[in-house]
Amino acid sequence: MLYRILFIFNDINLNTLFITHGSIIGYMDDLNAIQRDIVYTVYKLTKPDSKNIEDELNSYYNKDVYSTRITQNIDILIDLGYINFVDKSYGVSVYETTQKANNAIQNHLKWAEK
Image (cartoon, rainbow, N blue to C red; front, side, top):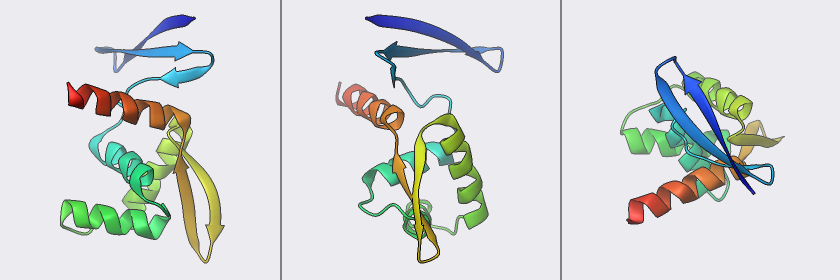
């Protein structure tokens, strides 16, 4: 069964999320650019720890991204349900994408193939 839920963000943007059997099949249009890049980075890395995420973003942006900026945005992504904290070993935090993030990424990839 497919239910359509409408959300209004910033009083002007209307975004639609689809919920089926309790899982969100959505889009990452509620995220800013660095947040989307973090989600994609966590999704594609085999060991998405805080150091690897920072290295990957520094390489992508071709400049240093402050670790505090990354950490603050990861905290927001955890609160929004896109990333889960998995473990902290050897002084670095390890993360994984949630089903919500995986669905959003798959939807984006399908759209990009059109």
